[in-house]
Amino acid sequence: MKHEPERGPDHSLVVAARDGDRRALESLLSQSLPLVHTIVGRALDGHGDVEDVVQDIMLRVVRGLGRLERAESYRSWMVAITVRRIRDQIRERQHSRRTIEAMPAAESLADVTDFASLTILRLHLTDQRREVVEATRWLDDDDRELLSLWWLEECGRLARSELAEALGVSERHAAVRVGRLRERLDTGRDIVRALGTRPPCRDLTGITREWDGTPGSLWRKRIARHLRACERCGNHGDLPVPTHRLLHGLPLVAPPAALYRALGELVRGVPPTGAAPDGAPTVPPASP
Image (cartoon, rainbow, N blue to C red):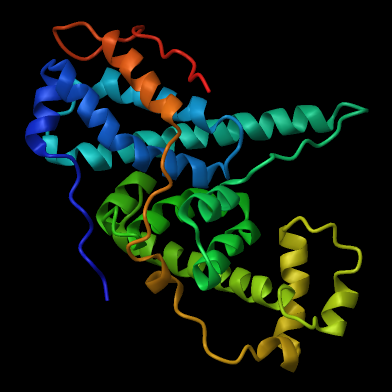
């Protein structure tokens, strides 16, 4: 059963912010920040540049707000800006990764905490909800943009029309992509459950003997192939709760306080006549 998504910011607040009310602008950005932070965090998997990307998105929102014609389209417009910025960041990251890999003595530095760990810790998730979050680690990088939007749709934070608009596709095409994503996420849940079973399956232990513990597409395929053939791993007792039911009503991961402080600095740099023109203001770095 689909639930109606939460309403976005009040239209009168959007209009006031667009027309130059600094207090309204700060309130609008503060209300928007958790959604943007969650989309970026999940799409970039908690990479160290998440906060910088979020700040840049909020700056783009401020710069473009004066050109927003319909206040009721604010949230979908903001999400579309977020998705475009995420795509730019992923391209930059892929380019940097290729450059680093080309260096003879390059070493891979893993993030201390990915967004899955952050979600589990901050929302105190247990059991099957925790399993869903851990399963996201088994998705490919190409899935993360859609995952971040669909997750919010299932949590009741976005409408399907907003998801499709942000991706630049029809709702019908979006439904097909979401269906495929859900299948891959369910496979990830099966893997998480099988790897956590005690005592472990001997055959699965043998298959994963050389695995370094880092989820990836190659090992996802190998483990999934085993799960389809193994009666023990395929029998988990009670059927798991469907993913979409587990996500419904799940709160957003709260942004760090430094991002809210940065918003205040951003708003103070906006001319009193309205939203910032191109080239100003600049976003100060978020202090820890």
